[in-house]
Length: 449
Ligand SMILES: Cc1cc2nc3c(=O)[nH]c(=O)nc-3n(C[C@H](O)[C@H](O)[C@H](O)COP(=O)(O)OP(=O)(O)OC[C@H]3O[C@@H](n4cnc5c(N)ncnc54)[C@H](O)[C@@H]3O)c2cc1C
Image 1 (cartoon, rainbow, N blue to C red):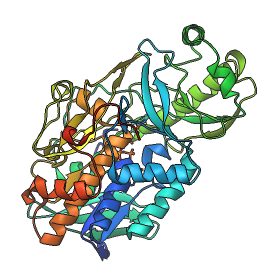
Image 2: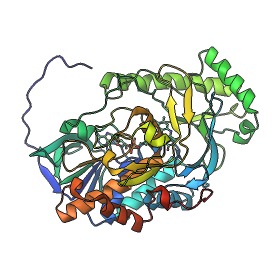
Image 3: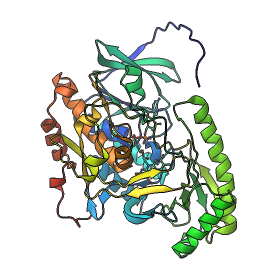
């Protein structure tokens, strides 16, 4: 949407609180950032626009955490792994499973993932943030970044009480869209506007998952290609996650093209087109796919899943070469596992390939240029498009969150700018919290959970 004019608004915004660290966005990375900051002693506020924490995992029904493992080797520990264990203990997951990403696509890819019931994740995260002492505000939408002399001073947000201001020397932008960074004037990388497609997920009940799994993969692929030819399916996949119980299928099968999720009209079109596709897909599955004959549509995600919007300009840009050549970094603070998965913009395929080894993510990729006191985590890290495709998975995003939450708390407690805190201080704290961030920390390949 291109506005045609501007009006001037004059606001007197009440200051509703002062904190050490404010985290904007309670998704994969932001929830962990807030827990890490609070556990490190920071007075921490977490603001989330939705009615629950978890981000893509809950609001988008992306019901499996990917990238805890590279092959059979676990590469993410600390708070993210603790949360994975808590979800299992709460009965929300049967544990890590093998899963074929892009199953029925041209390049299927086997992975070890943690599938879960998103509803359980919601209350496990509520418990974890409350225990850590994080103040959480749900239904609270970030509005503007407050700056003073080029440094972060806080944020304004929109709530049911109206517009409020919260002040802090450190703000973590975990919005997935780099909203705080954009408002602060941090430049974003622009690759000519090409973006991966969006997906609106849905949940089917009364599915005979075992019967479906027994269908040979060549037959599944033939069925998918037939559905695509007839215009009833939208990408080369029958991709779904089955929650504990084995009678539900959470399906990631819609594919909505040419969406700029930062454009209000496009974002609306994406939701409506997603629902149109779901109506078609559900009909196809019930008619054509063994195991889905009696399926019932139980739920559609609260909002469409967006794979990419902004990537910030940071103090280092993680590249595909860094990942594929397994480059080591002095300031490594998280380990990624991939895969690098690029959903074809404009097409029906997916390109999947594996980093040869777990890859290190440097702290500098989470420090925006120009603005002090601002940190990022999750899919908006400073990376090339390809590197972002390998680093955006939720376990990796959570690991980045633990690093910046820890850094934010150290900086606020010592009155230093985050960029003045040596990476070694953050690494020491991360090590004490059992986080994994260097390849050298990983035991011999083959280690499992
Ligand atoms: C369709 C799809 C399928 C995927 N499949 C997988 C998969 O199988 N496994 C996997 O591990 N990863 C998968 N991913 C990738 C992964 O989900 C994301 O890359 C990851 O969640 C990024 O974490 P994040 O913290 O940056 O963002 P998110 O988890 O999206 O969290 C961002 C949070 O910020 C909040 N927010 C946004 N704007 C505001 C605002 N103005 N004010 C307050 N809060 C705000 C949002 O509501 C959200 O809770 C998938 C992604 C998509 C879209």
